[in-house]
Length: 156
Ligand code: CA2
Image 1 (cartoon, rainbow, N blue to C red):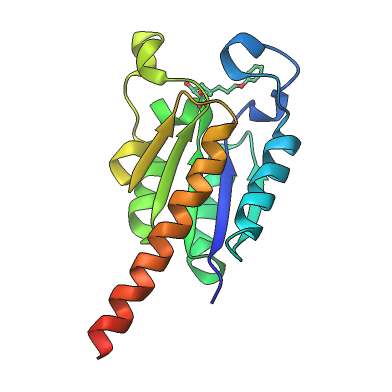
Image 2 (image 1 turned 135 degrees about the horizontal axis):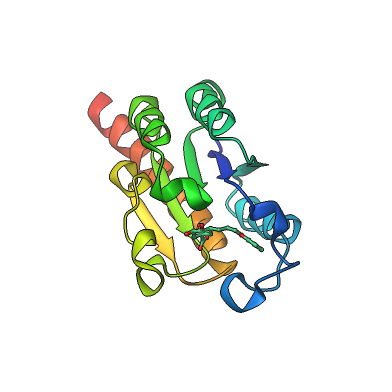
């Protein structure tokens, strides 16, 4: 079955394309979504794309993800650096998660150095702008296919 990927975007990422292009690029979130859809389609995978400025809503979406999805891509925005609640939800949900950042958080302010999301992430893509989301789709598809192959091999 095709990989079903949920892409979650945190606070202020709805503003992409309008301000701070030097840090975050010129693409809008809608354009990033379209690129992810194209990349997923090339692998017969599907993508559902969501954005919220509310921590609790992101936590709810992670909690519900297991019912409908095989993998997560998460750019938690500023909650990356603060949210133990999101970390706990990601650890509990049991789906492979790829963490994405448009910017390289290690080249920025010291407070961005810590990522709680990283502690639950199978892999991380950062510093590559919008392209990073497409690479995260590739990574998510890879993880889902690898998991399926391992499951099949165990049955033999
Ligand atoms: O580099 C990333 O993707 C970040 O997750 C973006 C977050 C930031 O807090 C993280 O440290 C790194 C901020 C997203 C805010 O996006 C804006 C876009 C346009 C204008 C203002 C904010």
